[in-house]
Length: 165
Image (cartoon, rainbow, N blue to C red; front, top):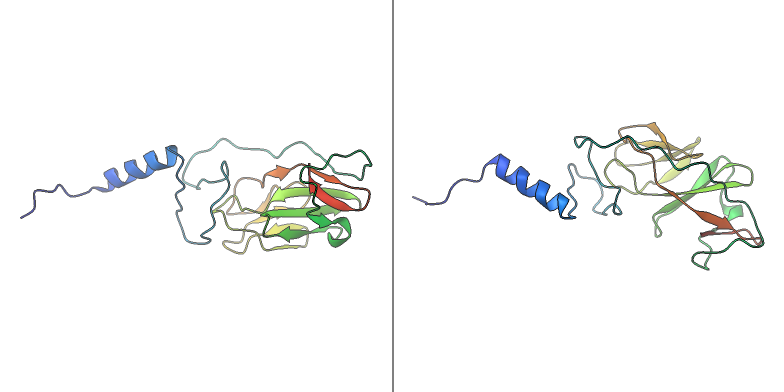
């Protein structure tokens, strides 16, 4: 006979909540083993304040635009009008909702942290659970995701190179 007290579900949940508050990441269902960047994890069962996307910010070519990284992420010519390009290594997606207007979002789905895979028919699509986000502003077009993709500031150089601002 053992002197150990059996572990209850409440104990396990309390420990998980403490780990999450201490900066750990919990994943409710499978999907990707990639972790979401800080501030982008969460689950449908945890109440969160509704978030709206950042105000409209369109990157346009400018001779004096500073470049955050110095290295272009992608050339403007590689981003189709009405579509976009997923940059998996950088975990970013660059879109061109209308000719000459470029936007950049994190490619990490806000549902379970998978990396989006395609941009088609005006949406950024996640392969894991079917979430879709609008190319123009990153807002949810189709769930299960409930929060928009996080927008990243970019600059477009005169030579067409798109970089983080």
